[in-house]
Length: 139
Image (cartoon, rainbow, N blue to C red; front, side, top):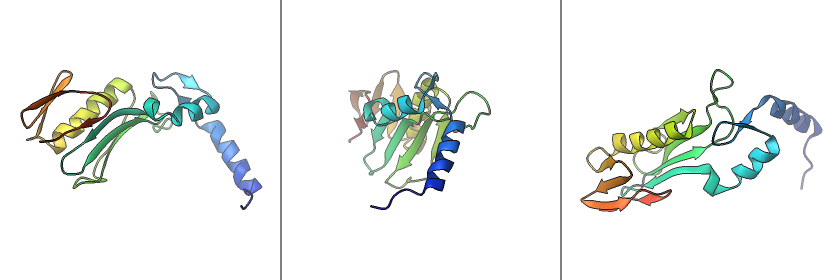
């Protein structure tokens, strides 16, 4: 295995001092704390919805400020994978509450005739089910 280039490692070290890390509540954390949480898929995953057409709407905690210090840290993201809407959507949020609401907004916008959100429950094709961390919608 090739050893890492010392100049690259030095550059990364300098860059990592600039990056700010935040937990899901927006509190600052160290690089080590962030790395530990980032490896935990249960901590990282905010919402996860698999659609009947193969699409997958995923909302996750990123933990690094993607707003680059402009205001409140931007630490959550919703993206769509697979299916007909793959890579069409990428939305970022400041708070977990915004991220959850934004996730379901994306689901409703992409699948307006199929999905209705009513509080903590969803309806798809007449079938009701509880909303949880991982939801598969089926006819």
